[in-house]
Amino acid sequence: MDGFPATRAGGPSPGIVSAMRLADIVVPETPAARAALEAATAYCSPALRNHSIRAYLWAAAYAELNGIAFDAELLYVSAMFHDIGLVAEFDSHTEPFEEAGGHVAWIFCAGAGWPVERRVRASEVIIRHMWDEVDVAEDPEGHLLELSTGLDISGRNPQAWPEDLRAEVLDRYPRLGIAGEFAACITDQGERKPDSLAGGFVRGGVTARIAANPLDR
Image (cartoon, rainbow, N blue to C red; front, top):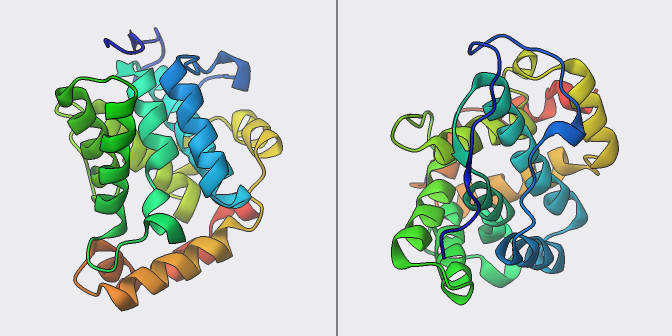
């Protein structure tokens, strides 16, 4: 299965924000993408589901605005599963939640008929979304998901997305209390798995950054 073709939008130079609407964002309509959304809807809370959708939308919009080529289907499926390791059914008592989510995605992608290399890519994208930085040349989808989740959870660099687009996305997919829910989840992960990246984030004050997210104002 080759998946959804890579997308590159002609756009401004990196860092220059131009007009964009929600309708301008490429959303894949492949069977795997639809099934990933169905799975996320079945297992995630409404707030976590909307967060996953916004994570894809912010990522794809950033790519469009900055001329970054990306695989829309791979990014979408990864976004739908990037926090699945936080939900009770898939929470691991030993693995960091992002690694647990990577395993879930690998199995899902096997069922979708993806070749092994593509399943591994989905797992990598999910694991790397917790990194401080992902090299866009090495992993554009991981780079985009790391940036988009940083915006949606802790409000990092909101100026990189047009204000009108931010308002439209938040209106269509409201936050539904994700700040409190996610803060509780990552605190729990950090307490139970202190050596994980989540543990480091908690010790580094991530809950205060979550509470101060400008997207919640």
